[in-house]
Image 1: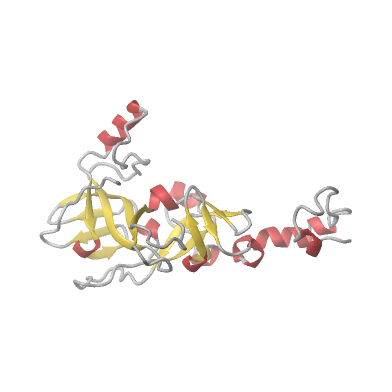
Image 2: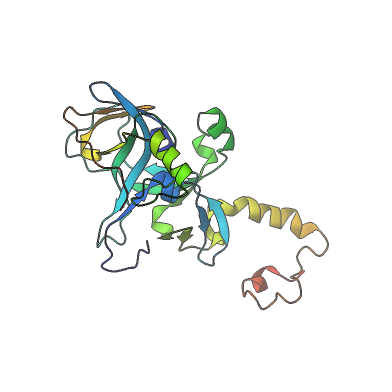
Length: 106
Length: 145
């Protein structure tokens, strides 16, 4: 699987939830020679596009663009890898009882 | 992120924000390509993922002709995508720095082909410009017509 197969995919739980707007990876402490592992997907209910970096916490300027992007991605949430039940081309199914996390980058 | 940093704290990398479309530089800082895609390991597409399945990891950076497919959809054939193993990545920052020289990478085979078969056959094309002879010791390997 390549990453562009996942970006923009439709995400469903019991119902349609949104689209994959980004895929988050993590470098583990002490794993200097290990590749980043997939941590989760960011689901945006209204937009397939990127958040352009405004998912970083505290980024509020330039304010017209920040306000617009945050409005476009209102209601976004992070779903961890363990809550993904099935990955298909253009479609991702989440497990029942999946958890919604904050999509903000700290 | 520099891989050799000891005791580094966990760092998040968002694919679109931190990796895709970033310039790739070789160990000497020479631009090589752009990150057009990422290859993930072991994701069973279309099958149910058992609980406790280890998360996939990034196995390679992919570069290739993606302009048309980004506009019109689809994806280029796998054979058109050049692969850089993640093991060659030294640092991820504003650019992605590799720990290899571009001469040893498949990413720049077109540049080498053009250099050897076209530029090199133009009179003076194999001559190193004066004043640059000592800038880069690698020039000595290629020069001299």
